[in-house]
Length: 230
Length: 80
Ligand SMILES: [Zn+2]
Image (tube, rainbow over all chains, first blue to last red; front, side):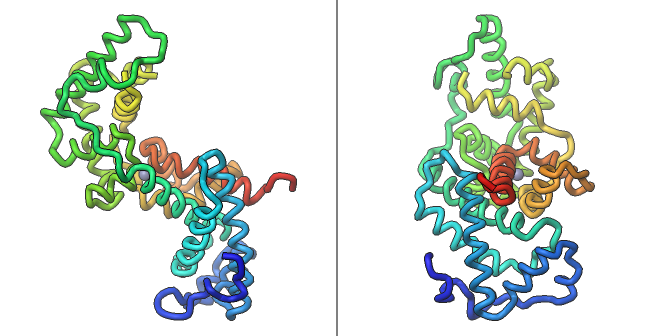
């Protein structure tokens, strides 16, 4: 996307056309945020110039946030272009509680993060929880230098976790936990389980609470577990 | 001990009694939260719930860390 003067990005039809609300804009405490919104609600040329400026701000932010993640220039550019469309579509929801650039950056960041997570995790199978020994003695070796006693205690905790998972969780909760164990991020996992992200968060929160309570009943308190598994 | 089990045990151990804000609420408020944290400003009740959620949700925590890095680059570009 090199030439915004061509107005490729400027929406012309449907829901992408921002409507503007003078009263709401006037309430924005930040003068700069007010100007951004006014420009993006403004005439075609004014909007195109604002979008070009915003584009370079978003690119700078994303490049910093994903430095070291091996993201290609094309992917950065695509993410920014998608983000600009989202920003225009959602302009009516900007309330001015942060600076405009911060709000826009948060949208761009989530756009690219979601894309990267989907690419990275789409083919990873959910880890099996059916084998009670999984994670106890198999998988990756323990690289920490811990004593055999500590190793044994950890194995006992994991064995209790396996039992609690089998006996106290619903199949739905078990599926979600398999995803967590496979390292699948929650937005990708929600998609695969056909859940809204909030619903997945609630499902996992309830599962974690049951496991925490079950562990406490077995004498494993939160603080002890954190120091054992630090 | 495989890393995922270690992470899961830690996640379980840190589970809060109350559910806190959800991921969507977190995302909607993340720009304000990150900006105020960077400036060392106080948190309102909603932002306190976001802080609690970030402790509880690794994905939102990742998003928050990256957003903080992005905002630093946006507001204080290298060489400025
Ligand atoms: Zn979350």
